[in-house]
Amino acid sequence: MAQNIPQGPLKNIVILGGSYGGISTAHYLLKHAVPKLPDTELYRIIIVSAASQAMDRPACPRALISDEMFPQEKLFVSIPEQFKQYPKDSFRFVHGRATELDHINRTVSVSIADGGTEMIAFHALVIATGASTSSPLLGLNRDEEFLRTSWATFRKALPTAKSIVIAGGGPAGVETAGELGEFLNGHAGWFSSSLKNPKASITLVTAGSKILPVLRPAIAKKAEKFLAKVGVTVVKNARVKMVEPLDAGSDSLTSKAAVTLENGQVLEADIYIPAMGTTPNTEFVAKALLSADGRIDTNASTLRVDKAGLRVYAIGDVASSARPAVHLILEAIPVLCTNINRDLLLDSGKDKNAIGEDRVFKEDKRETQLVPIGRNKGVGAAMGYSLPSFLVWLIKGRDYWLWTTENLWSGKQWAKES
Image 1 (spheres, rainbow, N blue to C red):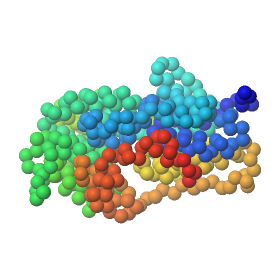
Image 2: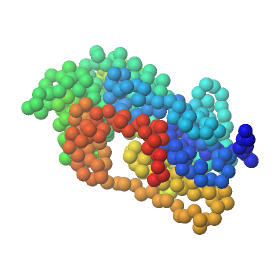
Image 3: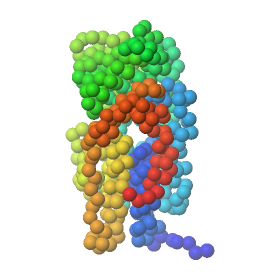
Image 4: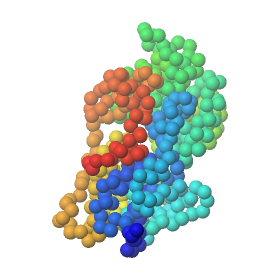
């Protein structure tokens, strides 16, 4: 049987990152962009990911307590397995971490997980490396094994912890406080505004005047009331100045810590969990390509990295084009992939007038954020409308989006071009 043999060098479309942005981009391009290109066999999608498994990262505040919280085969899925549906030569998975991007010579150096390094030339590049969390308990900062090991260490210390301090008033901090409060302390009675004599003292510290800064004050106040019912005390307008030992909550997950606030107050903790923001994973990128906050300087309309040359893009938490949020990543995927396809068609010699204009991304800045507090409560808003606790539970709180991830990881969500 005759075989289609590529008539030229392969054109690598390299995607750095194996989470929401990277996996979605790969599926969308394989389904809707590459098939439209002339000489499709010349194009190959390559995902480079430090983790070989994708996971439902928003679920970490509950998943860190026990493997019994979620079915593990759904919480973690093999990235290579999700792409076996495509022709073998159209996709490659590289288990490794990008260490240097040479945007001038258009190569990426990768430290391979099993040892050694590889330099990969790219025809197009999508940077979707995300961001690392302050605590290794709350994200895939390295890979799935490191995360599981961190959880195992934490779980051993949890039953004897009498005092826990969580720093950070955003969703990660609030959700972690709520999950731990309910797990360790249970709930206050129906007519009680707070839990009396909780088994574990849990303190949530925020530098802001309220928790959940994206949401309106009334919703934040409601969240604070829900936290009180599971034994969580919220300390506002109090920035953490120093933690002793210095590696508490990071390299040393379960060491006793003294948390000193800027006002001089010292909080003693059996367990300290830093949950203050994230750090963009851009250490391999030249500073000339970064914005002031360390993210990739990304064209907010086209999602191109204009300073990096032709056919370089960024999406997700690593990009400056929108605030970090999963729903904004998913809204950006069709825009990104349409523009990649357009650029590839132009490069192949197609007439500009025949392929239309750029597709434009516009960040939806309406108040949208859902924050479960324990397994039965939650606060939030969607598209500017406040949601009742029941809806927050129904949409996110019952399993932290696990009901959505199967279609996302498998590419079924992108079956139709949108």
